[in-house]
Length: 197
Image (tube, rainbow, N blue to C red):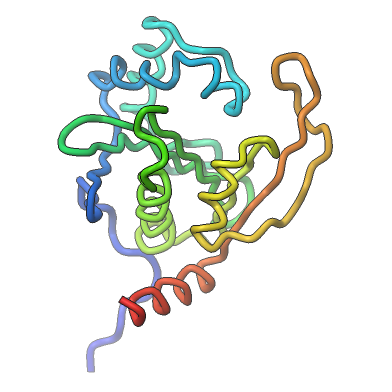
């Protein structure tokens, strides 16, 4: 009798599609699209970085497009498309510790409020657990970023920590919350969602 394979699938098949979205690894040609949100101070303030200019966008997208995703610190950045237009990004970062990853997500401000970030992040979580075999995925979120916290909650992530004044944002101490989900919790939530569909 053949054995049932265990562990992660051999690798993702790109693009990953959802009901409304198409996710794929970024390319250098995505630099212009990423400027739509990465150049805005009101968006990147919660990413703890300065707004990008064109040179920064081109450098980052070239680096991300050719980066490995094998060791702690490596980042997989995905472009999120709606009808062929890049409207956002998701990110998985390999963290220290066995089978741990950090999740990130952002959409253009004019694409917000439609559940696109949640849909893209849900697809990225499915990759994290089903393809890459992570055990735990977490998101580090500025406590004032209510929209991002709502996304984490919709994904079934639970708050694990509140790090009081743990980082500087715009020269002011800010508090960060950590949300996380385990592989078995994600599998259970996906099973319940499929049963209710």
